[in-house]
Image (cartoon, helix red, strand yellow):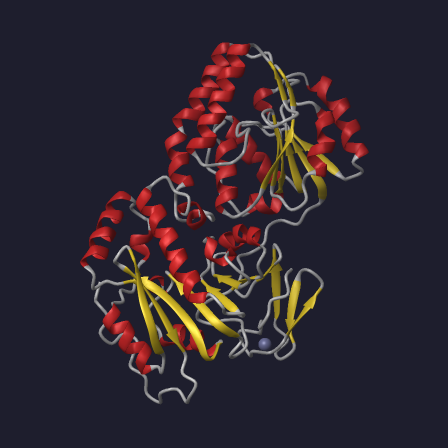
Amino acid sequence: MHAVPGLACPGCRGDLRADGETTLTCDGCATVYPILDGIPSFVPAAAGGRPSRYGLTVLIPAVNQGDLDDLLPALHRELRSLEISYEILQPSGPGYGTALRTGFDQALGEYILTLDADGSHDPSVLRAIWAARQGVAVVIASRYVPGGRVEMPRARTALSRTLSFILRRGLSLPYSDLSSGYRLYRREALEAVALHATGFDILQEVLIRMVAAGYEIREVPLQYRARGTSRAWLARFAVSHLQTFLTMWKLRNSIASSDYDARAYVSVVPLQRYWQRRRYQVITTMAAGAHRVLDVGCGSSRIVGSTRMVGLDIVLAKLRYARRYGNPLVHGSIFELPFKDCAFDCVICSEVIEHVPADERVFSELERVLEPGGRLILGTPDYDRWRWRALEWLYGRLAPGGYADEHITHYSRANLAAYLKARGFTIDRVDYVGGSEMIFGVRKSTGVPAARPLPVAAGLRSR
Ligand SMILES: [Zn+2]
């Protein structure tokens, strides 16, 4: 875990002490907070999964059952050489996905290895797969990374490669082999995602959901030996993949995906790309020169990687993704920021306040953690602008269930400016993105705060 400057117990503001890598304890009230995937968490967690009884569970789905007698002796030899405890399960089901999910539900290993028994998955690759597991949720034995090889008739190789290419590009998944079933999963990560596919499409679904949950994936080369399957089998394999492409595409492009904001920055949709880049430019310009910066609701946006700062979000998946920017991250709520008073000289809060109810605590918390004279950069759509309302209407039609439906509080420049002034903030500037998203650059007062600020809901547009 990164040391997080300014961190404090959200309950009593007491100092927090790290007990190893897994928990923080408050010196004031003795509350214990978990550290999840290296991120201190102040959001009450969902119930945990089953405890592990083995180091590894090997799943051999009974769908592609070849000659187990050939596989098992070599597999046991490799597993023994890894010196871990293991179990071998052969789950069955009407389809590959169903069989795999049955196995996932039964497995008691800390890790789960999946492979086929038809001779195509060489057990000697196991050592390389196992060695690659640190820090990732999935290791794929890949036919298409350097060092990997495919031995099968040219027509089949071409089809398989084309399929992988279409899936990779169409689903924006930067991995070479999305349909290799020879993989190692961290079970805890598997339990954090819900799987529904019944066929071979589970191979893509699990990757998409892992990426959506902010987990990382690694590939190691596999020298793949042709399996003795017919053209008809391969055709079914291809159709099964392509039929579900649209479902997978929707899943991949949902705002629930941990990398949604990061991908918008490089989106092929010009308006979306413009929007992200303009917002990035406005906010980083306003924040320039600050030394202790907090981004509240950082998501996966590149802003949290633009300079040294602390990122906070309520969605753990987005934080897992944002770890790649190398800044300290905190899993917490805007209503109860886990930081000391006056801990920052700049607080960024972009595209957050429209997602939560109009509540004084949001603003009193942002103000509290800011030092006197410190900068608050506050971005939200301006619902007085017809252009925003038109865009949101259109967006709501194009992407039902997207951000449009999540905007529950509709601020306008007039009511937000009046409110911030009444709280004692000085408004330095207001910049716009697309002439409709307003970004306030304001400074906290250095004097005594106003005794009776305006109610936050004063002058709010009704929905
Ligand atoms: Zn405390």
